[in-house]
Image 1: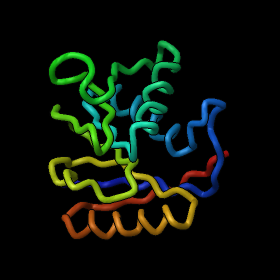
Image 2: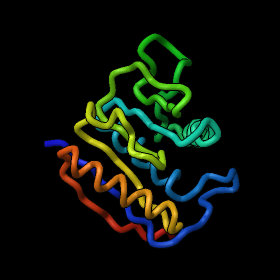
Image 3: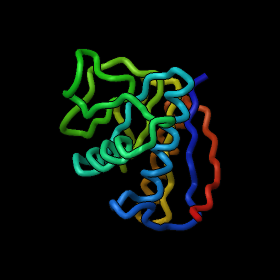
Image 4: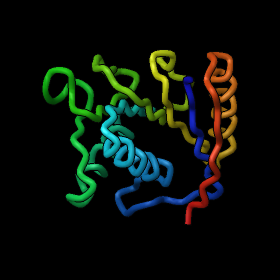
Length: 151
């Protein structure tokens, strides 16, 4: 069955000195966890700047958490096990899991059976997440929310 897990953030803060936001750091933790389960991942970012923050954060992880990754269009044919894209730079690779950091519903969501999404604290972003939730439901996904305290 197709499923989406929404991580519901209970407060808001910057997670690192490099400007990575908490939901971006949480996304990177999920990337490591999912990759260690031998699954290929597409990380769909809102824009190139966010993609570059995620890319840089993943490069900073210690060797126990290293994840082979690249920005869309870089690296070997078919991409690394983890590919980071944004609307102007789409992935052509085959992936098992979608980690969605985009504000809008990803039009390519239907090709994934497992999706990770986030509900930030900001009211505008929360409303956009509610819209995505409804669209995932209409597309036949099984939905689950998990509260996360950002401390």
